[in-house]
Length: 343
Ligand SMILES: Nc1ncnc2c1ncn2[C@@H]1O[C@H](COP(=O)(O)OP(=O)(O)OP(=O)(O)O)[C@@H](O)[C@H]1O
Ligand code: NI
Image (cartoon, rainbow, N blue to C red):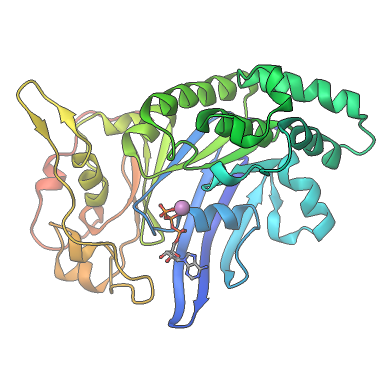
């Protein structure tokens, strides 16, 4: 697979949940590419549709959810065109996922050995127990867990170790794409850091691509080369991660998230959140869904949904960057850097 062919290609993907109160528009018109051997971050507040999108990619949507629009390709293969049997082979071999509830992903009544061996043997027909066990030992080594823990039950391991086992299972069959949905959120900061470093090492060594989902901006910025920012089911910005350190324009929502990261200046700690709440996905606001919280909102923002505009370092869904700008707030354009940025 050459480096210019995306491992993951989302084209105009929408997902709707049927609920008693009506259709919940959880994901809207999402397009995204992830290239081999790269890490792309997906961030957004709780309820913005991140896990729904991840489940859609794995074709593991809940019964009341439906892909209503768009295509999802993994290594060029349309996931929704696969037969059931082909899908089984495709999942875990080509794409895998560390689920948001990963701490409970392990079977509590099975030893680590049994769970790892089963992973290999259920996907590699004809593999002997001895070989599967040998591979399991190698796999534990990869995530720096002593092989003596093959005999352990999940509850005998620390939270960090359990999470490393879950990550080991996700990469066991050497997939090209690993989706990680908040893989470290339940862990304390020190363990979080060590697991993140390990994920980074494994990724570099083995060259798989990661779609890394988190609501923690600073965490994602460290790991990813590109970052997609999700708001109310839409990717409102897709930016070069390095551009976040520079004084270049971003979507007002991205700017808000960045301001919410504590910055330790010489004098004091400044934290500024975003006022208001994400919208109800049953009743999305007209125009740009962010307009009720946006300090730059104009009449146009309230009535017309913005297109995607190309900036040198990012693609942004915001009228501030359109040819015909709404209103007379030109502070954003004045902030445009004079020299051309490279991605
Ligand atoms: N089974 C379901 N039925 C109806 N609506 C649902 C269902 N699951 C999720 N939703 C709705 O879909 C939206 C997106 O949820 P999702 O779990 O994808 O968000 P998220 O970005 O992963 O949030 P978090 O950061 O809390 O994990 C939410 O508004 C949620 O209420
Ligand atoms: Ni989620």
